[in-house]
Image (cartoon, rainbow, N blue to C red; front, side, top):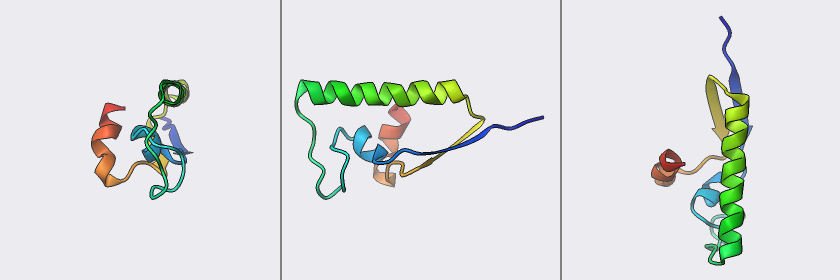
Length: 76
């Protein structure tokens, strides 16, 4: 039996889930333009596609969202 363990550093992932710029949380501004929001949705879909492509049994995410964003991660 084999087990596929995958680890991925999704830098600024918490910011992405919150609709904010990818920078330090204290400096991150909320995206408001339609173009920025569309780009963020595209990034989310690329992440989903990669996870599905790799098809891990266990996925470990570094730089994931903080505990205050767990609901956003569940929705993701």
